[in-house]
Image 1 (cartoon, rainbow, N blue to C red):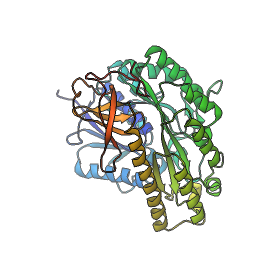
Image 2: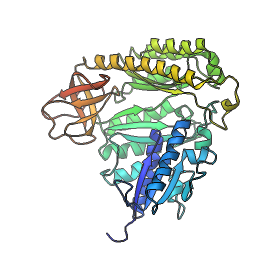
Image 3: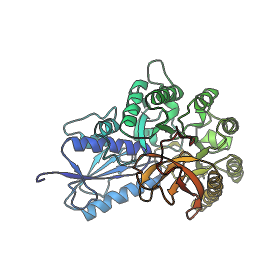
Length: 446
């Protein structure tokens, strides 16, 4: 159509960034824009940046510079975390506009995307254009903690929570629109509810959302949780997790370190690693097979070899199934940037390598365990051949007959038949029946 303006997105970083980008995508479409499949010929190019590490910020800047170079006639906007948190992020990059908040891209005239409209509009439209097979619901944004290494509070601001009823209503709309897995996500879920009346915590929210989904769509949807602060792992948490039949048996914990001295220096002394281990041991009696991920930050200023070994051995003992390992990077403006005892880059790189090798071995071993289970389910992200992520957060590939009739976002019951992939961490499966049925997160077809 003549006169249509087109846009193209590049989004880096976390699930919350993806959620924010989807909200903006639908806002632009509502204003008459059309999304382009590539930046070639698009009128508006948006880079939704990430600043969680120095590398992420550098990559965000590199992408923005490349788009400016390759598409000189397009309007280019750099938006989001790196723009807000990194001083002079766009220095030396002429003709690129800055939008410190992703919603600012659509602020002409000003528009509020709080609460984000993304999944709401997608549900009303039948979600035919939603780019993810697993829907993300942002329940909280920002962080008020102030870890010594982190600039997220500068990038995202103080913690802000969405009301329980609002989150629940959005989850129900997504389920009604055809999403079969919903991920509850935020920047710091441990701060959820502190700014709301009656101060519900995240576990109150999970109970409400899980109950509503089970009542409206019994056996048809499942929930997954994004990263949890270790301080959230309380007896109440265990009770709520045990009471949620639609919850994927999968936790991701922002551990960072297992050395008490390093945690104190990080300003993360609000939890003890031994308590995390005890919680996981208790949860394993409820979820005999479960995925367990962790964020680990190694090479923090002053981290001794003994402190590193404490973290390594702690992680070896945990039933980890994967880990996101980050070597510490100095972030100007953070407390740790001026700490003494910064380690050489080679030391940080070697420690990260050791931790990643350990996590890789654990993931391969876990995949072999999952491959022996009688049944699992995966959300179809691709079809012909069908593939997607199962409840244990492993990639599954459907092998053999049963491909016909599988649709994107469908929850497919399957039988594991082996492992595949370069690291033997993909699960090969066959369809549990000629016509895959809807299934609960533990693989029991209704």
